Length: 193
Image (tube, rainbow, N blue to C red; front, side):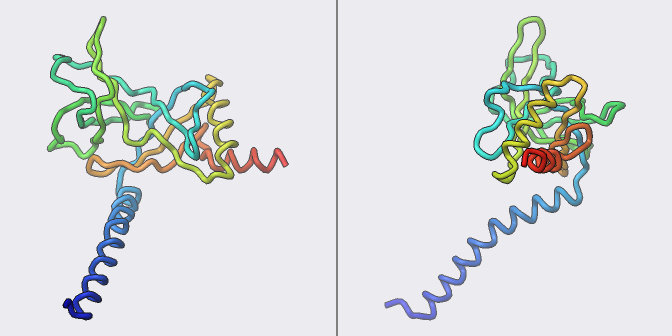
């Protein structure tokens, strides 16, 4: 028969380990947000009939393709590393794509190959790890409408603000003309009352 002390000790160890894993995940994300470098990824229109699934906005990015040599060496779903730089307006641009983690660059992002295709040129379509922006349910519909309206109006600038550290990323916010979408959704909800 197993002693009562052993059962209690195993229970405590199990409980601590179950709390440690999510705590580590939260700590890692908070560390990226606090210590990571912010990048602005310009978004572009998507099918306005289904931009929202549940409680998140689906994001599509303007800069999501990169021309490569030797298209046959790239596979769909394969992890890749993007070396990033910013253009004159502060928006992210992909400088290079590699199969392995860059050793000399602090400005890189781990992503995946969505498609490898070529007709006139050989390109990789990139799947970013931050293509969904989750929101509180009560603000979701107003945010969806604001996002769709902004994407359909070419004078509006929509972008995702992403913190990146050591290749890992956290989507901090979605902004329309520099204003966080949560604030726009809140204002729209108050105006509709």
